[in-house]
Length: 318
Image (cartoon, rainbow, N blue to C red; front, side, top):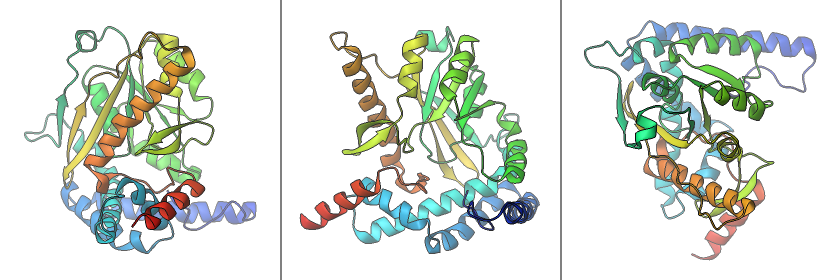
């Protein structure tokens, strides 16, 4: 979440004051949308962010990412997708105070449709915990709830908000998801311990990891996390892709996909790791390509130099 009232360069007292002001504004917004039904709150967030997002400084990063994802689209189509990105993000934010209602499976008409395409007998029998991977598509945080709902207790890896007052409030609103949380700092060690205890691990792998391996993503090299592969190698747990897409205001479908296949046996360790990274990026790119307007890409997925080079090459080829 963007800092709207403070900056790391501010003095400590100004940072503290700014954090409190930012948290107060967020609380007012959440309190207001909580008074509405979930569908109306979602629609309000969609309209509000759909208007404000394209006018923000962060919108340039969204469009940089979409320039690669939608390289064959027209400029008008990319602009429309950029607006949809903000609309979906706004709906996600406005739905946060309604997570208890959205995750209520006792409702006559549940808000989340669950589809399991993973028919591996070992997965269905829950023989061992899994490493669930996802992209920031649709309402991405609901995937954690569905993982638990199908019988896999899970801890998800996440980045805490820089604002401690806002972080506390958001974490409390996440309670209905029913999952545990692992901070990105020392994530490998904590995730490894989680898997050894019999709990699954979930993480979003569509973000840039500057220390990661350069692996093609939409055909363009992108720094990619190797964490799922390392965890799988150390524990023998399968890697399972999952996606929660938006069907409408406060309406979703979560699909659990087949496990990623193991690498060919004739590859050495380095080649096998690269093969698995490519396979992971291929699946995740497919999720995004199906719903580009639902992909939250407010941070650059590719390095600045790579995006600039891609744009220059695309312009030169037209």
